[in-house]
Structure formats: C-alpha cells, structure tokens
Image (cartoon, rainbow, N blue to C red; front, side, top):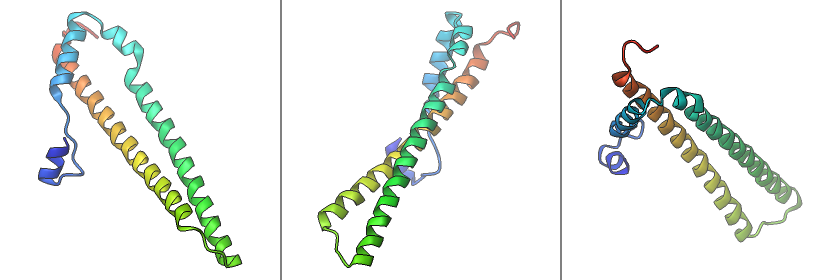
Length: 131
C-alpha cells in the first residue's frame, strides 16, 4: 500500500485486498458460521474501539496544547524563557500525538473498507434461500 501511495501520489484513495475478504467469506459460508460471525459484532466493536482511542488521544492532545499555550503565556508575562529542551520535548510529544491520531483514522478507514469488502464478498456465497 505504501509503495502504491508513493508511486501514484494517491493519498485520498485506499487499497484493499479483496482476496482476504473473499477467502474469509468463503470459509465462513462453507463452515456455516455466518450467524456466529454476525453475533460477534466484530466490525462494530473495532469501530467503537477506534473511536474511543481517538477520543482519548484527542483529549490528551488538547490538554497538551493547553499546557503549552499556558506556559507560553506565563513566560511572556513574567519575562522568563523556557529551556529549549523542555519545549523540544513538548513539541515532540505533540507531534507524536498528532501522528497517532492520523494513524488511528487510517486504521479506522481500513477497517471500514475491510467490512465493506467482507460484506460484499459474502453476497457471492450466500444461497438465495437464506435470509
């Protein structure tokens, strides 16, 4: 996927491997485990987990930004200067958290695409008599 993105500069597109979706849908139908898979609500729980992680990370990011902005205001008011090491650490932490939020978004989108692929593949293996 990364090579595809670099080669075609397509950052707004996503690539999914439909072979995995087709294979898993086939195995689920052959083993007659469709109801069991649906009862797990695996895709929904993954989406909830990603949403909770994202919310936590965004809260942490906002708190870090507020702390940094209050430090900047206090240093301007009292004429003190922050050490470059302290500001570098906080900037590194902010950068890390921003990257983590972006990574969580990308994983959530990949999971949604996998869900759509699996649901689409299951259509091929569902018999017409099943509801």
